[in-house]
Length: 93
Image 1 (cartoon, helix red, strand yellow):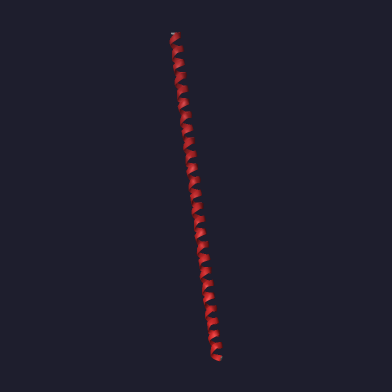
Image 2 (cartoon, helix red, strand yellow):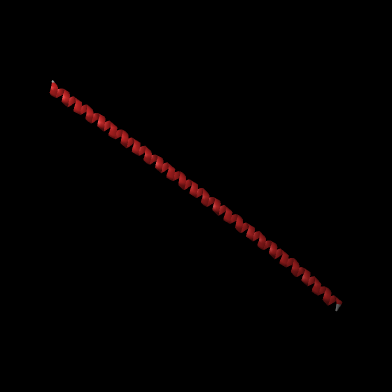
């Protein structure tokens, strides 16, 4: 009878240790999952920053193109004015 009780106590102790190990393993798994989620979030943030930088670059390019177009229009205006001035000068002569 005493041997049976001792065996039962040993079994309960073993079961408790196994449950503790299982709990520890689950905790570790949860921590790993949390770390993975954090890494994914960081990657997403990096992607967002890269996307914003690309958008900024495109905006800058568009601005440069607009400036170039403005310069071209100004040059065209100067050429037209010069042509107009030359034709009026030729008529006076």
